[in-house]
Length: 193
Image 1 (cartoon, one colour):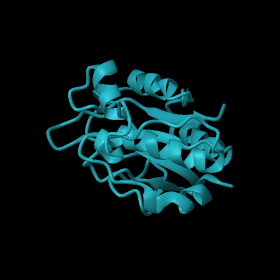
Image 2 (image 1 turned 90 degrees about the vertical axis):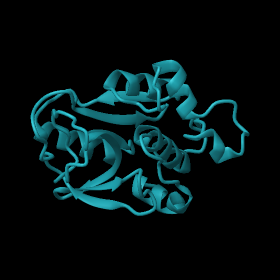
Image 3 (image 1 turned 180 degrees about the vertical axis):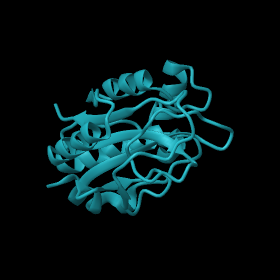
Image 4 (image 1 turned 135 degrees about the vertical axis):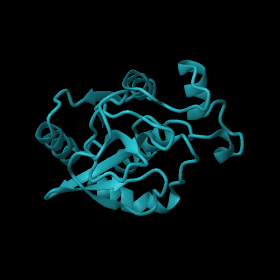
């Protein structure tokens, strides 16, 4: 079963993120998709405790607040996301190259191998694609995490945490970001054990 086929089986059960929790929801969605393919993989708590009627001791949001001192319970940096993925029982892998071709190849290789790829880019800037570039956040923009499940041609099938119930098709290419600054280039794959 491919990542997209697994997504199609569970997409109606995925919940949209609340403001500022895109990394948590993208990670949670990736785990649910992987577990649809291999049910024995580790599960993770829901992003918010209220989503399980208090049946879990700690949500992903509470974990992020406690472990990363995140006021809102969000994952904001590459080291935080790496630690978060490892704590969930999965193996993170970063695309170490800065050029768009290497990142495109990374997306293609990883998704074809059955590994969803988490990607951070600048939100609020009408991205032309899903390959992140260094950026400077402003009052209207901020880091945003999405989940790539497949590539085809020059496009990617993306689960957007704000609207996870329908795949978006985005062009693979650089975002039109303002100036170099605070952002990082981050690509994540969740490896099966």
